[in-house]
Length: 109
Image (cartoon, rainbow, N blue to C red; front, side):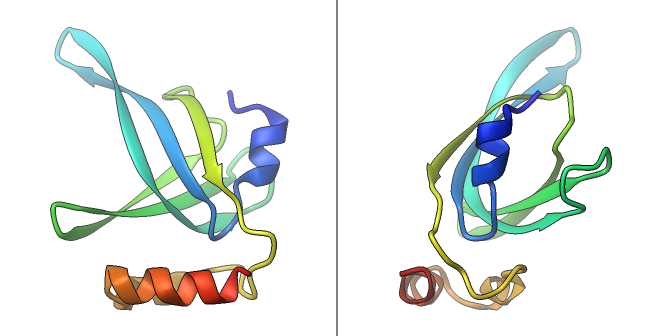
């Protein structure tokens, strides 16, 4: 379970690392997914989720994580913006990595 202080920092625009347990046949390993939070949905109720987007090998990858998932070991918040003007950052999908970084740095300061 994710700690409450970390949950408060997971908001759109935050740069995070998610440590999740992956089961492969008869063994388990921890996989790390690092990316930017695009959206947070349903507050802190049982069905609450957050969407993380990263570029892996030149391809955009998005993962949707349930907040109360037992598969999540830990979440590290690398940076959390002070203010973002939108609650859903879906427009970052259509921008290149360079343009998205430039645009995001401009709106989060």
